Length: 218
Length: 261
Image 1 (cartoon, one colour):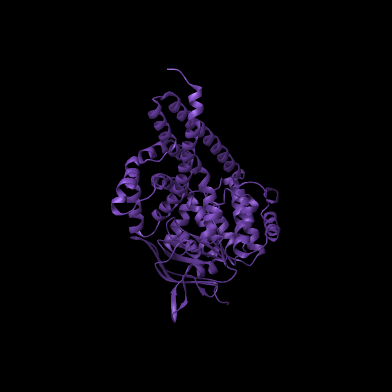
Image 2 (cartoon, rainbow over the protein chains, first blue to last red):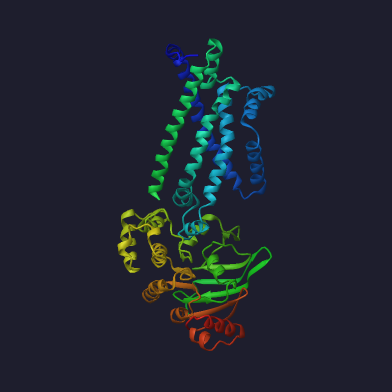
């Protein structure tokens, strides 16, 4: 089997379209995960036992089941109870919820790592709760979180092909359908691998820059 | 005699089954310098932490500068204080901690100016002028742009004192401020506190194991044991002629451990 550049040129527009959807799913999924993670982290810190414990249970449940199963559930099972959502929306919700639980753990660890004395010093100089979070706690908690969050972002990006299982025409799904209708796998699959590698390398480099910038500020 | 600036009335503090303070009462006059001594776990640090509202109380009343600390008027009587009341009360009190607790991500100058700018609406310019004066006073004028990690323990503690002073509290609380320092750095911090005691009329409460310093610094010494004030009096009375056996035993042990009285 030989590499066919003409074929590559023909399928490129379709693959780029798939790549676009992959990126959209990643960005929206990451944004949702960042927010969901924050909500989970805050609820887990709640002084009300019922809230913190039930949040912990939900987080453990989501973390303990495969993303693929969750995607199937959201896309194929929810319609049975009357909730029908577009495939892409289901994909973003699945990614956001799943990675939100990981983000929550990262947030929690980062916040718990700020010394207790910092809360007390903030109180002793009479900062409000909000000022304490904004000026004292978060600036110390966030920089150490960045490497872990970056790893999850790249991991999530590489898991987006799972969305092909719920009919989202992202990069992998496009490549599969091209391959199936042309009986040629080498070019589309190779290109999928190359695309993912390039995007991963770019995001890792970007996040290293971000990390260094935070380090300089502390 | 003027009205007390601090009036604690049968305060108790329990952590679960552990009783830290047991019906303790204490009055402090404005401008008075008080040294709180006693074995660890005797409740003396808890007194400071209660005054700074870092701990709540299990029973009793605390009055600071004529107002209830943990209660406020409401519904025809007193109701538990809300966050706004605590915020209002904290403006009168500053605290310096054993482990400094400087904000590590902010420069020395920003550590001092942060709270005045945020909580008192002082302009950055005015806050910095005052911060530099305070740094001058604690002998660290050249360290304004340093980060806390670049300072020695003694320097950190002097910055922490300046940070607390920047809010012009009426009452300053010093919680074992030299305990975490290398011995050769203790004196520079004590010198700042001596100056402060001599040059201001702030009320100061000091928890310490430095008996020599407590003797020179304080107008009154309180000896704590098991959540109660066992003995109190002028420094000479307590250190030279302690009446209670527990005080005598404690001071003997401290002297045996090499502390100067």
